[in-house]
Length: 358
Image 1 (cartoon, rainbow, N blue to C red):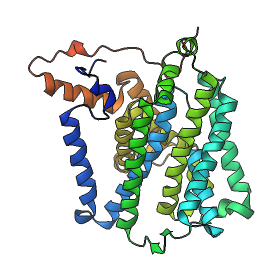
Image 2 (image 1 turned 60 degrees about the vertical axis):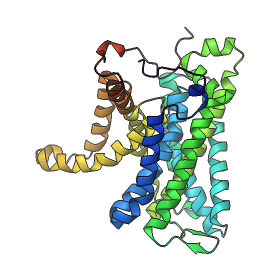
Image 3 (image 1 turned 180 degrees about the vertical axis):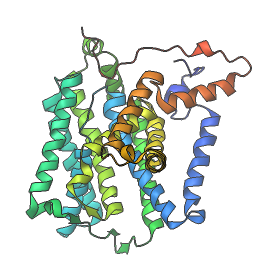
């Protein structure tokens, strides 16, 4: 899909290459900063939760969208970050130190998983990450002396240097600051040699190997960075929930994260943002569907995962580039109007993982 028309080398150096992008990003940031002034407490809390899922989406996007590695167990890293941080704070460590240690722990576990899965591909990698999720969920549920088991774990109050985040808008600004940091870091990561190696591995492992890229090490790095960012989202999510239980980080949560990156648009940070917005609106759509559908269908326990799976299949078949791809087409339409041609966007076969070694 041809969208960007490059006219200078600065477009490869700058994170935002066009004046319109600067205006849009600045406008969004200003709106987010002003949100506590005109939003109710409930909606502000939901917006903060949306920002947390943006972080989790960027973490999974690094692995799936940029490196081409499938993961159905990313909710495990979300849980490790949440539980690790809460346990450390309960033990008496300050917020910032427990945050750093929880993120490092999650990243190291992610690298260990990446080391084990570095030679797996496609279906086998998906099954391996799903098995990892089940193991972590079981460990959290059974290790009652540390995690509280299925009875749950109370998250300590958020406090930094004696300042208690007692108001909703306090935590909202913390979430917003972390989101901006993560997005800026991910954008710079893609421009670094490591980030370009991620993309090379995604596009063709054989070509990347012939250029001297250590495939196994790149996959391990990708798993580690992705897990660390997702663990950071878990830290913030813990303070939003205030109470943790193993069921919170189960298969359905992993399916939600997968839905986020597929629907938003693989291989794009903007896609992770669009995907988080879409997933946040899904519960509203689901509640409307339950009112409209017959009681026999509406009361089915598996309605939500079925809806998630159906949406993923529909987007893969009819809009592989996701919401971000549709957004780019819309921008391209206005930029080239009245000379817009539908043939500018040619459907190309996209690979979720590198099967071109055959």
